Structure formats: structure tokens, C-alpha cells
Image 1: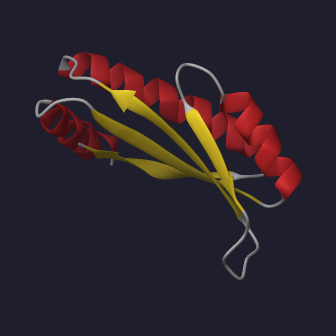
Image 2: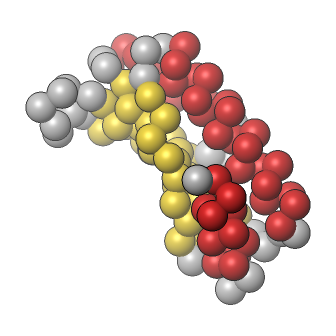
Amino acid sequence: DDEAQIDELYRASRKGEGVWTHTLEAPSAKSAQAISESIQGSGWIISLEQPRTPNGAWEITAQRSVRPLPRQAFEMLVRNVRRTFEMASATHGGQYLGWRFQN
């Protein structure tokens, strides 16, 4: 759930800047490219990986640096990014799989 992840992100960020990674999947190369184009910007580094699973889904990874912020700012950031990525993936037949944070 987002609340638990937001708490985890907030605590981890107190240790310093880290990398925030989001994962999405798409049913085809064309769909993966469309999703990646729609989420580019705001400091995201986007990468695409060819299918490695039986379902043939392409993996899209979006990463960016995150510095320590107040918890309320993390809440807004997480919700906005999740909404953006969910909409982008759904629009192009894909799926948003979630995120993780690493110092």
C-alpha cells in the first residue's frame, strides 16, 4: 500500500539522496515506446527491456534521484507520479507494476 511505501521512502531518504525506480510493462515494443515517450521529463531516466518472460511483455524502467523531503511532499509526489504512470501505461495497453527506493 502507498502509505507503508511512503513511510519507507521517507525514512530511507533521511539517510540521504537515493534512486527512485518505477517499473511498468507493455505488451509490445510500440506500446513500450509510446509509454516511455509519455513519461519522459522531470528528470526521469527511461530504459526499455525486451521481453524475458513467457507473456512477452516489455519492461519499462523510470529512474531519478530523490533528495530528502518533508513527508507530506513525498505523499504528494508518490501519488502524482503513480497517477501519471498508471494513466500512461493504461492508455497504451500496459500496466504500472510499482516502485522502490534505494540509497
